[in-house]
Length: 420
Ligand SMILES: Nc1ccn([C@@H]2O[C@H](COP(=O)(O)OP(=O)(O)OP(=O)(O)O)[C@@H](O)[C@H]2O)c(=O)n1
Ligand SMILES: O=P(O)(O)OC[C@@H](O)[C@@H](O)[C@@H](O)CO
Image 1 (cartoon, rainbow, N blue to C red):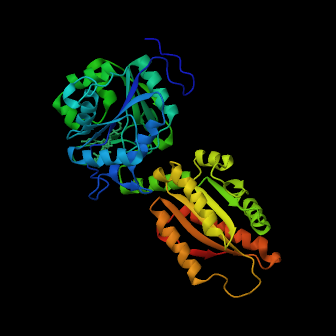
Image 2: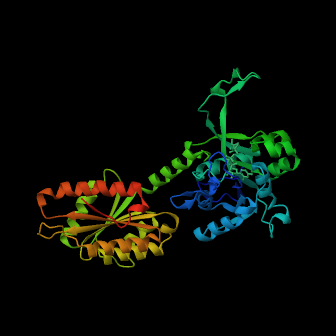
Image 3: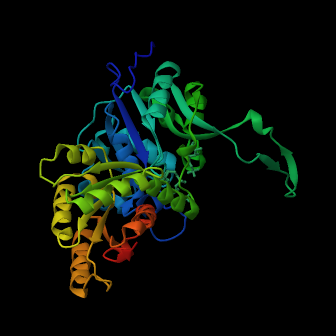
């Protein structure tokens, strides 16, 4: 079968591709009452990230999420809340293989869904707890499966594989360089993997862990092995969940948009902040009074920026910031990721007393509490501009605090006022 010509990430000519995401496990090795695929990462269930990773791929026609019967309503709520499209939920089985098999049956057997989906030529199988999957590896395994019948991502082994004898002592070890770790995604010509599942034994279904093996054993299909990237790992233990959270927070902390009004002090501080920040993070600057149809800001919003700094003199700060909040709420961003919004209050008054009253602090806290419900994390930052000789140092200190708030994204600190 000639593989169809793929043009980058364009939809492959006439190749219907579907994906099955097994998400029906209990996550025993992670521990806790919540199965790991439903554990929150930056406030969103892990499975939603993997579904979103597949939704971004335009040439995947259907996303089949296989969950345990008691989690069907939970999964429906996740799809509804995050606006996931092209997703069908299927009831899982007591083992991963049985869940995957149920996922495949939606294309062939009515009992598994109230309507049959178009049977794909190629089906991707990808663990729902592997959220960091990019289009490149998906297209590689699909293209390889079209040619070889099956394909799977592999990674170098980190530890050496050894076999123990009956007495629990070392029997032999394998030469690590000759072996690879089998990861996901995997892809198959649908008929091959479906046939393999139909033929395999209960022992395979209950104790097997490798889909590629089923294709070889029952369909004499030697899967093409495709070198994958390091981020294909599976969330298995608690540490993996911490790692996933850290990676996602890092991904959200790559860019900041500094918004200043045109008043001189704000514009000057905005410029100095830009210069101080740009060595650590990508900075976009907007120094116009915000209007609803500000195209530059709209472009930034659509560019998936998750961090904003609003620089205003303290009298107008909240009302200017409200406009940014209004625009964010209209975008899809806070639904999927927490957005950091730092309210920089410029104090240009000459008096040396602490220049912000409790009433203003209460207004900031109240505002922050309200918008936190929209997944927007508002923090206050006071910059005192009295002494121009100290302004650069003060701005550098403000930049360091801004970077810390962006990296930390701590919902417990919203509404607090820091002083640069
Ligand atoms: N009966 C099962 C068991 C597992 N899986 C899914 O298969 C993927 C990989 O399996 P694994 O990491 O082993 O998940 P769990 O079985 O939940 O983990 P554990 O073995 O620690 O219980 C996960 O997305 C898991 O939800 C599934 O769909 N149905
Ligand atoms: O055994 P687990 O259920 O943890 O993992 C299942 C699969 O992810 C694992 O077997 C990969 O090697 C791919 O086949």
